[in-house]
Length: 140
Image 1 (cartoon, rainbow, N blue to C red):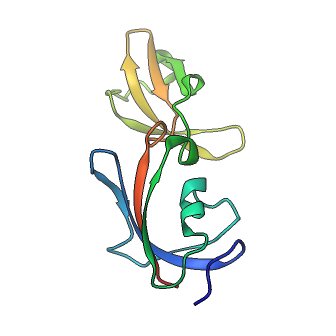
Image 2: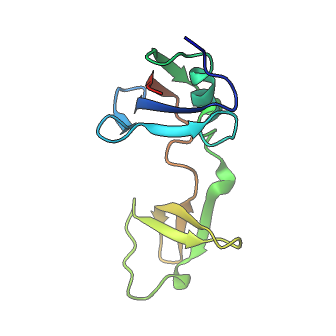
């Protein structure tokens, strides 16, 4: 059996869990995820885990935050004057919003603080700062 190397396109089934065992994502109820190694499509730790695997092989890998979505970055907490929000919108803690960026792409942010004058948004990835565990099965 040949081993997976950079440049190979593979299909995997996976289940991702947090340190407390909470499942945050899985492909088990849908088609396997397909990607090409070495193109930076996935978090670095996931790609490293798949390198060298053979079809039919499974592994369990712990990926530290630095090889996953990185640390929580303070500069990604944005304070926005409340009057910049639509008048008919009632902001709530934990509410997710999509905001536009200069490049035209949207970014998901979460409301983390609300005051009379301003609203604090967190633009970090929801899994930033978290160590992740993946069960991975190489299916093709």
